[in-house]
Image (cartoon, rainbow, N blue to C red):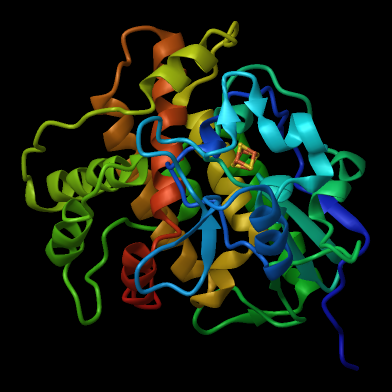
Length: 343
Ligand code: SF4
């Protein structure tokens, strides 16, 4: 019997939390806000002549960021101008959807969240509910729009495939251990920085450090590249700036009961596993190696940031997670991900 990927019922990862409190980091050039659909571009071109940007060599249109503030042209201290003047439903689709993403599976639509905004990673936040997330996951026709689909055969490892139901039962134990945040490398059962096929870690570092330009994404790439260079080649990092420090310190004021860095890392890892985006690259065993590598990078970055108090330690872990979440979707990292061999 053929089992199809379904969008309904909507399924929430246990323990996922989010509330947009307007920190605005997601409206900044820490990541490109896109890809914009044709409808988004049509609507934006009615509002402004300078709303859309197209990065060299890429087809996708993204929102234009201001070079002086590093934020979207519609952002101000008062928040999003489209949201306040025209209504939240008039915002471009990626803004409506952020930080949610949907993966269609044989059991229903899995709602996952990205960890590149302080409204997802810092302070006391309410649990995500399917009801709250639903309106953010609809396309312009009012249909649930999955980014990714998984069928009824999931590669647990290079030599073992499971039905989706069997996979989900095994995965539940993994996700709850990750959320608990204890012994994360042991829970992942993987070693970071395997020997890559066809490229070297040093070449990945060079490419990341060359990721130039004034944007915050460029700064994130330099932190990420410096951490790999230090962990793999013992290369000392050059001076690293934090253009998003204001956002994190401001959001950090909400933290009244700091959680340990491992809880912040585990929450991010659990979402990454739950999203199943990793299945594009191979088995879960391979994804565990990739996640172990990014975890090692996140820990190195967090250690270079301020860890003087439990609160600063919590803020630094969230900042490190933002960096590894953003860089994890870049072409440079996807190339490295493809070069990780099946364990
Ligand atoms: S359009 Fe509005 S919500 Fe989207 S990035 Fe710009 S300011 Fe943020």
